[in-house]
Image 1 (tube, rainbow, N blue to C red):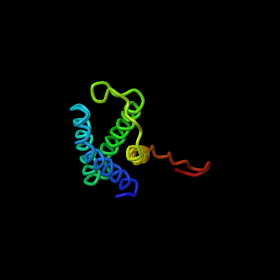
Image 2 (cartoon, rainbow, N blue to C red):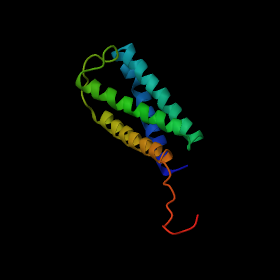
Image 3 (tube, rainbow, N blue to C red):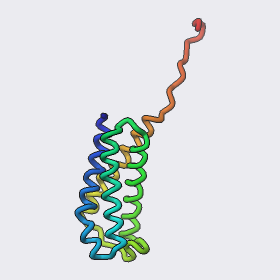
Image 4 (cartoon, rainbow, N blue to C red):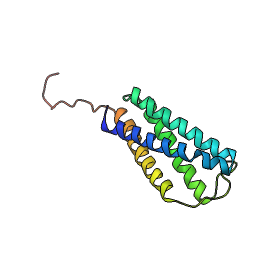
Length: 133
């Protein structure tokens, strides 16, 4: 397992822990927000486990990148315009959320770098002129 994979697993685990801890408070705001936090927790914990079991696979890295991008985008909406049905009113920015989003951003960039690295095309072998093949 590579250090990059470990970083993505750690980002998933931290974000899952935060979302899981905050789920009850979000249920107080409404069922939609609470369910969204529970779904996020389950997805992130599942991705951490999947990456642990299949660290060389592209699919878990792609899944992590997709979930992190979705979480970052939804937080941007939640703090600016609100998210219809789930969290219609904009919420204030707080330190825990910003720290969590920082971990998710690192996870996103690292997951994308894993994908790019795994799908890089090999360079063709170039032979000097005048050599026999």
